[in-house]
Image 1 (cartoon, helix red, strand yellow):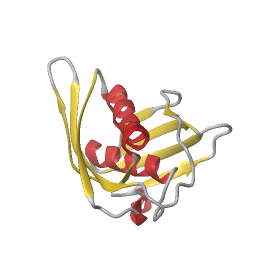
Image 2 (cartoon, helix red, strand yellow):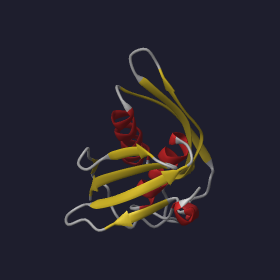
Image 3 (tube, one colour):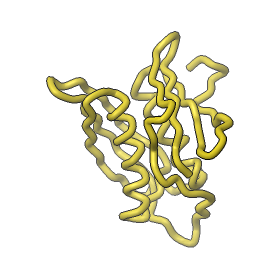
Length: 144
């Protein structure tokens, strides 16, 4: 990891939240983007790694794959009260028709023990960037 060993950073944005996530691989950058998204709503490191949710996502390209991946965090929170602590065993493969992602979301069910500090309403394609130079950089804007 370069860029001062940063995993992600929040950027100034007028109405929404914007961040950049970094990684030596595309998978690591996706993981760090997921943690950044979760940390807009709760402190992921304070969530106990009690449960695991296996996810499988598809996207026609890496941007759609990223969008669908981050939306899954919001879906699991809204539907199952699931709070992400970390992402394990993330793999991305390019199939004939689509990119495929598999990963385990590790976390816990929301309870009085945890503090929710914000709400991400939706992930957007606005200003979304996925690029590789000396490392991968992902930029995302979310609606809060």
